[in-house]
Length: 393
Image (cartoon, rainbow, N blue to C red; front, side, top):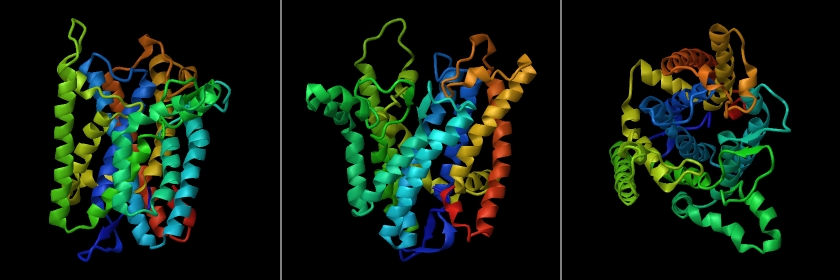
């Protein structure tokens, strides 16, 4: 969430115009990792697989969606303190949330596919999910931050119960209700033709609410804050390793069973399981003490990107799509737009798929171009505070 995240003073209040560096740096890191996965989409390489290179190219990007949702919740908390008015914050969350939903269904979809034909393909992706979660957070902010955080954790832990809800209604209305409920949590019902629901609302609203409750920790003194972040992060990592290892040990083994490390890291993302969220949020929270003290050119680059995440997101899809055209023209003599009619579910013949080195070369070029654009836009926002619409992008 752009424009959010003010530094805490020794009295626990948000002071001055200094952003909390750790959030910006980690958010910037998440955005850069996201580019890897979306370049992979246009490369035609599958999302994971038996090859370690492809598997870890996909796995490292698993940190993106949890980081988006969690730090969005934290940013909502910090922005609320800055505003000092929950009514204003609630209105902002509803309007910005609905704007994100609209962007997902229009601008972002067009950037993904370069098509305005909605008859065969509509994607409900991460920005759609974040938008509706922000709308819901307009109700959660009226609770105490700790209460909101606890509710968020409960939603994450007991998310599987949401799959049972459609089965509690009468048989006559079960299919129609179940079709709607697929937007909330996957429960095994058919959805509308041509609509791909990539991200459901649960457990992500729980992740955002947990991030909101976590925001109060960032107001503590430096030593205590770092101790708590390390405690939460490392405990989550340990819990993940123990529980996941137990589950794996109980699974039957045959000649086709993947290596232990692949089984350990290949957790369910759609919808995000409890183990998936422990695996991803634990390291992100544990990295906050490092990010608070990080310096140098790399952290500076990440900080710039983390200050304008929505601008980065919108631009990166368009840029990756266009650079895929450039690569295709160089390699195959044509742009081959027909491969991307349902991006991010690219339909590319196997013989035309890129190599991993080419994927990472395009990724590096795109990140450099995106950083230059983000640096310009961040400066433009700072120099034009009178343009209120900039806080939405």
